[in-house]
Length: 359
View 1: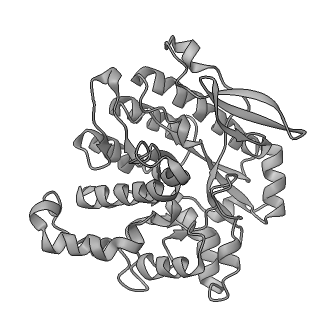
View 2: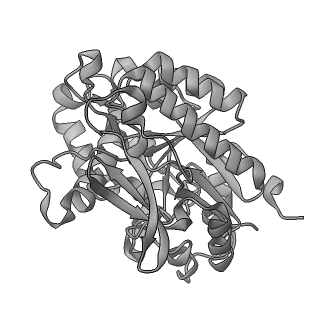
């Protein structure tokens, strides 16, 4: 059985300074600077005059990535962009151009190593029509099986919208309909974390806000009736579902005790979307990035062994060593091991593992 890492990120080796290209008055878009730190080549992701993040060749050089996959016994990576590149705040036409640039780069990486990489595209969620157009291009021209989207869509001053769009928002419903009809998978990744202005110290946006963002996305899609309206829609949520698995009791209790506030768009108990028995798993997928064997056990109880996909958040330090938590668990073996390491990801993507076995 091959091993598939569902949650990994990649950047182009280079890309334009979109702030200059589009004529923005200040540098809001991330732009690259290549250099050397500590004697090693790196890429500095710059925003204005400040460095947002430093990344190493394992974030942008496919040769390095494949070599590290071999070291970690990973046969296939599912690659998607780094979420800071979403740029949902930008003018829609600019967001669409950035999406096309990133998607073309990912498709090119996949085309050169079709048995080692599977690509997920990105789309300009600030404009539903443009997002659907790029979603269709990802499917029909680039042969990508799905896309990565954010846990919400932040305000966009260029469209006159000064509020967040949760994934339940009616404005986004046509996008989910298109993904459903095109049979495109959706990987939901948190970004622009809630409360980042109030809790900047101690890296709390990443430690507290990011798990909350993923729960926000799950609850929005459940309570908004997305899974009811589009029963065959395939959605996977990053980072083990964030805080959702560990607060689902509270979420269900709120649904039951205050239906006047919670059950206003969907009267189906949120527990109905989770594992019912060994043959009926949850209605959506999560990755395995929970950093703790007891937390992984909790995921089994809530989602079932058919809805957890091995993920690592490679190559970032807040992720996990690919497959280590799963392979190191003596209770995960046989069919369950095959599912977590390969089959669940392929089911989510609508692909067949046999097409990725090395000849």
